[in-house]
Length: 201
Ligand SMILES: CC(C)(COP(=O)(O)OP(=O)(O)OC[C@H]1O[C@@H](n2cnc3c(N)ncnc32)[C@H](O)[C@@H]1OP(=O)(O)O)[C@@H](O)C(=O)NCCC(=O)NCCS
Image 1 (spheres, protein in one colour):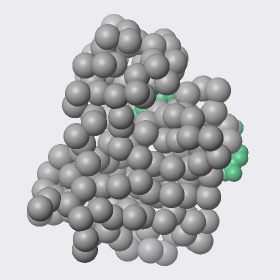
Image 2: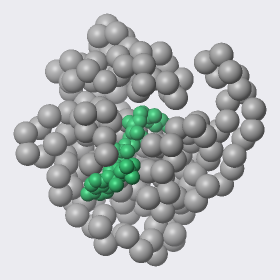
Image 3: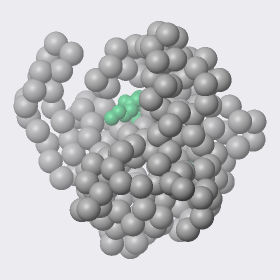
């Protein structure tokens, strides 16, 4: 039987697999121009989101390459406030990319930090990854500041290396190694995350 990711619990959040009933809450922020601005996609319709859910709902495998995708929900009332993904790009070399978005109504409260910390912990301690990286547009201050708060290092700044949404793209790469995560000074903060694995260890 293949193992799958079940909910991760942090102090204020539950990170759980997507469900069909998440469409409206995802539409609330993924339909916004400011959320889509630095993603490769354009603001999504409800129909687009239903189609994407066909892909996201099964993204729970703990084996090989592929993506874990989670809804970020408030522990107190279950409200979906964002989404998070960890895409294992090279299972043998333990490489994975992290991605995140929050409904603007819930930004500025440390929720993305709390959720991403739990995913880094899960990636390094459960999946035994070696390096987790993130990419963002250099103008996406919210994203690169979050990666710096997570203890990720800026590894690259690609200048005008591609065309993106009608202009030159300026891209930052950030990354953190497993051993850097182990010694990250704020790691104590992140120990609130309690991963629960389905399918047995
Ligand atoms: C990237 C994104 C998820 C970051 O969200 P965020 O809410 O700014 O990130 P955090 O959870 O780390 O919150 C940090 C802010 O909360 C504040 N905060 C309040 N309480 C906090 C707490 N308990 N812990 C940590 N930070 C806290 C921090 O001071 C910080 O505020 P500041 O940015 O004014 O300094 C958000 O900007 C987003 O969804 N952007 C649009 C989608 C997107 O571009 N995604 C990335 C594509 S590459």
